[in-house]
Length: 459
Image 1 (cartoon, rainbow, N blue to C red):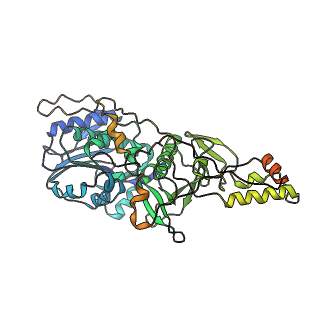
Image 2: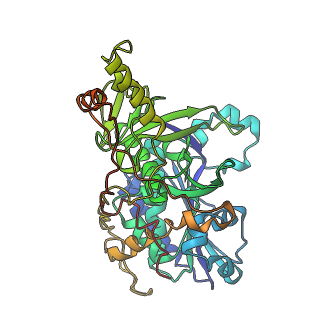
């Protein structure tokens, strides 16, 4: 599957004091990780631009660099990471921390031996983007695995203050990075759901949308949910689920199709034109989820994706409810009129708890690295991190709906309306007593990313 061209996968490990690891230790880490990622040591060549502490290797098609430098210079990438909702909510001290950062270890995995940004435009065109950037999902994920594992080992063998995972602009505390890096679900690191607010100009209600930072490297498109009244944690789960489905099927979902975990969840995929940066946007729209009062909005889908498996279905439209009714028949006409009224009365989405939560399994297979006699006994990549660290990381953004203070009062939607069968409608229509009854709110357990959006992570 094609992705948006990614010149390099980078991370930055930030320190208050310069504490470089020994160059031989870095060398051993690079070779072990490359081999784990499928590149044998025999295919790895040390480049002559390396020195005692900085190592540059060409391992197959991957150019792997680990540079340990001081002084630290804050870059626009750090500034962008500080502006994400996660950093402002769960790591607010990071802004002041940057003034104390003195050194940085950068891990970079590239496809070109020559840094892409150093190439003149005509040479980039001549070489072809596929030769200087990661453009296929498989090779992009392989590069991310190499960068992620090298970063994890260095983080756990030193004493950093923060870690930046550049592809998703994810600025994390070291233990939080280790927890995500060790998790079986790497989408939590590779894709950062970032909420944004918008005020409805007519009602003054606060609406929350969600964009998937880093989605273009996994799907080839920007991915977002437009501002609406759904819970932020559910919007985040939708974006992560979309990336999972496309990766599992190794293909994109067609424009207009829907996916969902079961028959009660239908999320439509809508493509929008490319922007100036040659990136198109995929909008994810919930068109059916009774838990939030959304009852089959128009969706011209012919396929659904249930738990990542594609299967053929029929079009999902509200008009199908009126099939077989004769508008010239008085009773049927009354039913059709009531169906239209019910459609108009569909309330705003309810800010209830999200879908069932998935268990975040922490696992990383061991790396056979040499024993370190002269370095502290920090955790090796084969060890596990207490799951609470990763779980706490998820408990930070649901307050998005009340934190955007400049966007107006929070939305308080009405409960959803019960749906009636045609037989019931016929009977009620005959008695001239067509009505609906609001149900009680069904209790639900926290959603997959509900903790991420519920409260701040432990400081």
